[in-house]
Length: 444
Image (tube, rainbow, N blue to C red):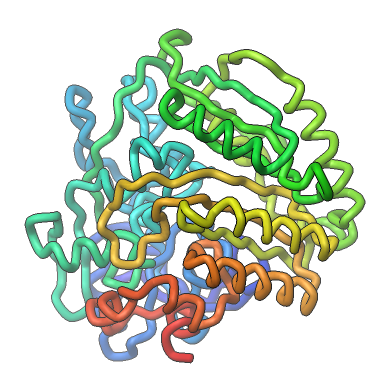
């Protein structure tokens, strides 16, 4: 018997898109066949996890959702080889609780551990070590996929490779990801030796980047988007390697703070963001030398605050993450920062990092060699949308693209220019699976 669909309020992580949809919460993989059998007749279903997609790639405004969070069992783990097989509803948080004390870690990780294993595959997530490890899909050995038209399938690079590579970064559109087999990475401890170095402008970032990639595994920078003039692009580079000392422990699951309510819309304005950025640059930019920190502090600082997205208020916020090809990255990033500065809509959290040449093979995976700038903006309606369109134009002119997992408004033309293989994914899409994002960027 399948889990019933029950109306439930659903929202994007950015909070701009809110809807009530029929949602099913299966507890056993055996329930999926019945749920997808019904979807075959309607063609309107989408699998979802912990809901950390910022826009509408994890929503289907006209259909039904199957939440896989209850399918979170570990199926096999070899502590000698670091090969883990788990149901796709297991979160990265769950996985780290098991593997970190045994000397293993995720091969790469996004900025939150509160995403499911299936979501990490569907978005082919990346981390601060892309120049070394590539994206998440590069480390997926096998996966189980349940389709409405073909039933349960096992995929790998050798077994149904076309569908396998369509599923890596395929936004959950090729069917319901039931389980994933992942190759973990060994670590000598659960701590990072991290160095923070302030730089006074954008050229300083690229100089430090050239010095960092060969010597550090994890590299990313915070950028002060409120800075102008000679300080345009100033920020703090964070670079780290795994420490040989500190021991093998897991992170504490208790949150330091939880925001129970959405903040008033006026909390994040150009003055408060500017003051925060100046303080952050002053504090972190003046530090020198290596500091040993637990991995949670290095990879997941925002996870310590439950519901941090409520800080942006009822109107929510937009994320904008782009990647610009290497040869033109410096100039394009400069243009984006100038545009943001001129708009008076400084980003509260801005991260600049570099992607290497390792390719997972995903048909519409986001990473490519170049510079990636991630930004967030409180939703102020038309003026924010206008700014985002102008940023899109800079990215398009430079031959770059936007990250679907962070997007909630880019045009079909922008998406199709950045992802020329999108039609190959459409041809392999499960005919019963659809999302609001996919409709928006392929049917306009």
